[in-house]
Amino acid sequence: MTGEPTPLQQIRDRLALSVGENAVFDGWTVKAVEAAAASYDVDPAKARLAFGKEPAAMVEAYVGAVDAAMAEAFPPERIEAMKIRDRITELLWFRFETMLAAREAVRTGLAILARPDNALRGMKLGWRTADRIWRLAGDSATDFNHYTKRLTLGAVYSSTLLVWLDDQSEGLAATRAFLDRRIAGVMRFEKWKAQWRNNEIRRPSLARFIGRLRYPPG
Image (cartoon, rainbow, N blue to C red; front, side, top):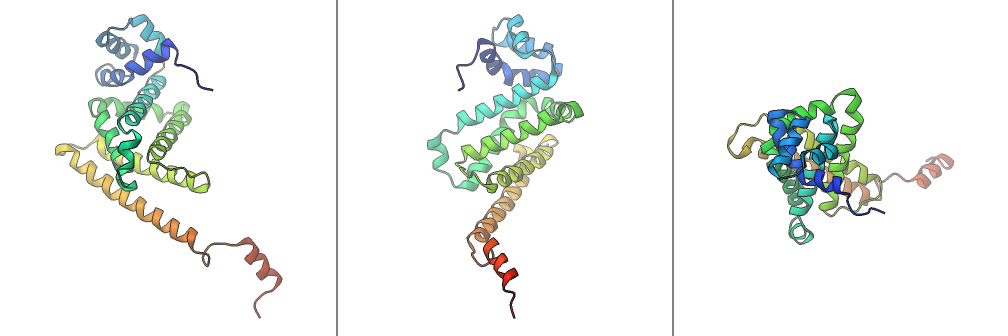
């Protein structure tokens, strides 16, 4: 069971977005943590204890805070009013808008997570975010489709993130256009999968395959 967050977890959750924004100037360092603590009138000693000194842990806390903000911004009543395509698009777009103030820190954060000693942590964070987005969008799949959806969305998010990092267009128009194209591709793929699963003729059948082995066509 998940209990109430500890005081240090509460501090981490409260400051994480600000730590990312300060990391633009101070890097993913204790200095960024102290600057965030000062802006929220939090004891800097407690803030340092909450985040530690490991840059990858600070990046992870920031990603978790973006996840939490996304979930808060899209309660069930807002999500239910949207089509599935719009749900995924708007959830991703919210992330890009939320992270804009920390864009250069996101760039360095990705480099930190790409290091060999942090690669597993980075993959877990990417999977967790994709899973959070699909769950918020209402996905309840538990079969193999559960995994393919998250892998596909992770690829869309990571490729769009690269465009976003260098996007200087007004209102991030280039990022939005790229995201819309990628989401359109995902929706076509999901439609094809649904049609394939529902087609009894095309769907592989173990019993039919064994039957053909026993009784080959004459």
